[in-house]
Amino acid sequence: MGRISVAVDLEKAADTIADVSRADLQIKLRRAALMLRNVGGIDLDPKVDESLTGLAVEMGLSKTDLIRTIVGDWLIANAYLPVPCTLDEEGATEGSA
Image 1 (cartoon, one colour):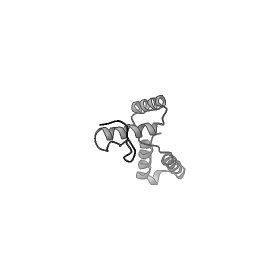
Image 2 (image 1 turned 30 degrees about the horizontal axis):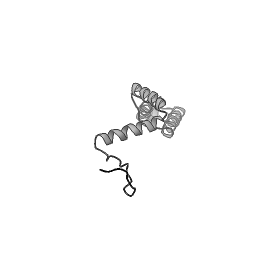
Image 3 (image 1 turned 180 degrees about the vertical axis):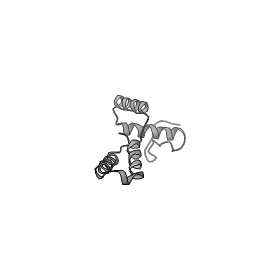
Image 4 (image 1 turned 120 degrees about the horizontal axis):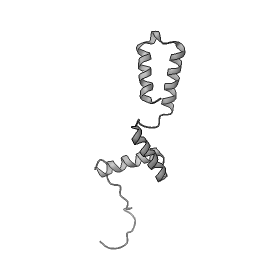
């Protein structure tokens, strides 16, 4: 059960709180607590999620690290973040300009 369906389930229970049994409410709240405790990111389209999982395995990264890299690279490429400087300004350089 995804986070969105748990949220919808909780909203329905809240709307009809007088009709929900204590046991059902307890189950719903525990399920919501478990989902919140184990949240690891955003809900993605299943096809996108599958592609990212496969790519992460191929690259030897966790899916979270892959998404962090993709978003960071996109922000740099589109000038939302500065390009990281790879030269140490205090260090010596070889060659001539």
